[in-house]
Length: 180
Ligand code: IMP
Ligand code: MG
Image 1 (cartoon, rainbow, N blue to C red):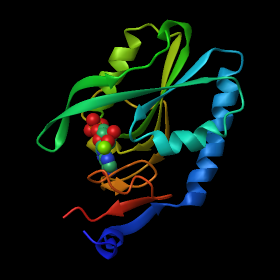
Image 2: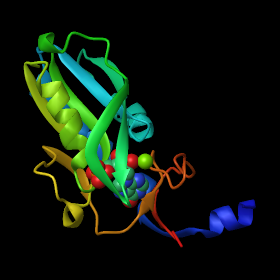
Image 3: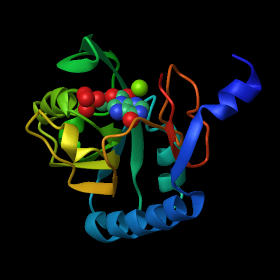
Image 4: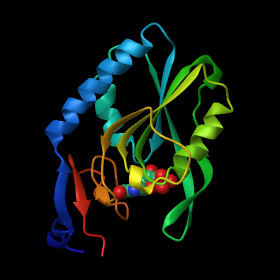
């Protein structure tokens, strides 16, 4: 694919850089207020969370730690199955922290449900899910974000951490992509 094709596949910007920045500041204030005085671990699920978490991190002003997990989802056709394999795990003893899971998008919810079950089994002081994007129309698993920054329709989106075939994660905005 040449660069003109690469850029041409971006269909429409759904969420702008400015909208994202404003939302990050809002979530930062929410975290500051809710977790002040509590041992806090913000756990990013890679790779999708790396861009938004870097920005969100800079809006949080209370003491907190960061950790990362890589969870390989197994697919049945085009959808995830809810079976995951952790290929990179958190280093911290979860039972000593209030844990925020930071996930890029909740689609069917299968991936997040599996990750959440694994983390909850380690007895965190509390557990909450913050998702950049929520596609509620596609949900099949019994799970929801405690804080969904943006709710979007059933469209395939890229940018700000989200990929299509590993491309477009570094777009500074969120856009719909032509997937054909
Ligand atoms: P779920 O298990 O169906 O909730 O799938 C979640 C994972 O699918 C996310 O972490 C993403 O990696 C991927 N995903 C779902 N929808 C999109 C999308 O619109 N764009 C990019 N990746 C997506
Ligand atoms: Mg992905």
